[in-house]
Amino acid sequence: MADCRKLRTQVGIVGAGPAGLILSHLLHLQGVGSIVIESQTRRHLEERIRAGVLEQGTVDLLNEAGVGGRMRREGLVHHGIELRFNRRGHRIDMHELTGGRAITVYAQQEVVKDLIDARLQVGGEIFFEAVQAAIQDFEGESPRIRFQHAGEEYEIACDFIGGCDGFHGICRHAIPAGALRCFEKVYPFGWLGILAEAAPASRELIYSHHERGFALLSMRTPQISRVYLQCRPDEDLAAWPDGRIWEEFARRFETVDGFRLNEGPILQKGVTAMRSFVAEPMQYGRLFLAGDAAHIVPPTGAKGLNLAAADARILSRAVADWYRAGATGLLERYSEICLRRVWRAQHFSWWMTSMLHRFDGDDGFDYRRQLAELDHVITSRTAAASLAENYTGLPFDLPGERL
Ligand code: RFL
Ligand code: PHB
Image 1 (tube, rainbow, N blue to C red):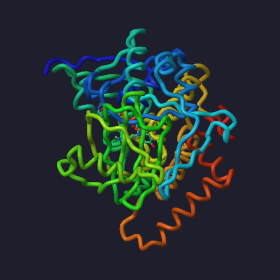
Image 2: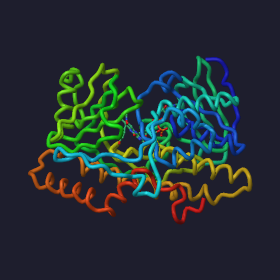
Image 3: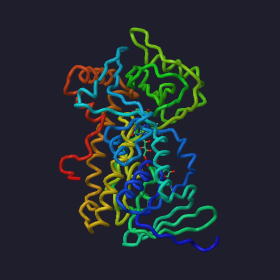
Image 4: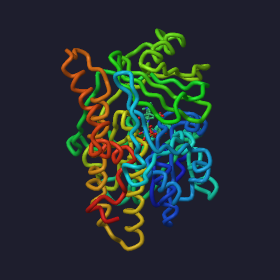
């Protein structure tokens, strides 16, 4: 290998998912430079099918950051969701219950595309296909990131590292054992998800509780449905030919008045295991973890991408304050501020998951308890408002956050 190429920036960022890209973009808007390294190709990131629901606060953030143009044109604004159980649907009017908040359905890979474009347009540096990444010396004041790219060895010297490399990345694992406390809950089920060329049979998302297991009807565009069903965590996709998938969906979304899903060619299929995970604190020295690198939620609350955006917002502000005024206050409180929101989202995601899924060994008690809870949510304005407030997202400026 030839000599090591030495680069210098203010913030070195590992990972070009939503957390890393939003961080890099917000830092740029505040006059702080960064370099992003990413192990995958640009194309892979722009095609990877993941989240779809953006909270009001995430939408506002992307708009304020000047990257919301296409989202405003192509995103689908939803004012409510449906909870379906006992073969009947019940609408939760989130807009009315929250005083005007909404969610926007806009695919994660579209957010990623918009952010990559915005970074590259102003000369932002992203190294795609960067392999063998390692982070060093972040306990002190001169952290470094080493990696290989196109057969060359690189080293980035920086003041801070943004560990935005997702749940399986290297940054969290680089923190010495004993400095982190990890909390984890693994659920005994997964989601089998499909993307299909079929008009969604409902204008809004349907969260369906069913004795055979949970199912969710979502969408990406007025022509493309995204549908999930609860399955085993290690479910074998080979056992799910398209016909069986549509049959199972038909059962789980069935209503007394004959609801029918629209079927169409299945474009993609996948199984996701479900877990809750939090690493505390989200900082070690000059290394700051953001997004899935620090926490994972089960997707039932649609919170993962939104938490990543919230972390990136707070971190960018904390770092910018440090460069502007030498202020360390927000940097020191980064973890505490983020974790408050993270645990709120953990509770909400766990609550939605346990209210809607079928648990093995359920003897009927839990099934009836779930129905009682769902009944409460649709009959009590207070309970419905709590769901709506959490689902559309708590405002960024939590009491005491003073941002
Ligand atoms: P990401 O998106 O995983 O990005 C991390 C990036 O780091 C790169 N990387 C490395 N790069 C360089 N060197 C290394 N050693 C590296 N190791 C890793 C990876 O290639 C990757 O590009 O994390 P980030 O940025 O924190 O973003 C988090 C979100 O992606 C995630 O929380 C959401 O997708 C979760 N999620 C949902 N969130 C929502 O807010 N709303 C939803 O509706 C929603 N639905 C979902 C979801 C996640 C799902 N799956 C597949 C887990 C639905 C599903 C099915
Ligand atoms: C999605 O559209 O992918 C989606 C929507 C809502 C969720 C999870 C995933 O709760």
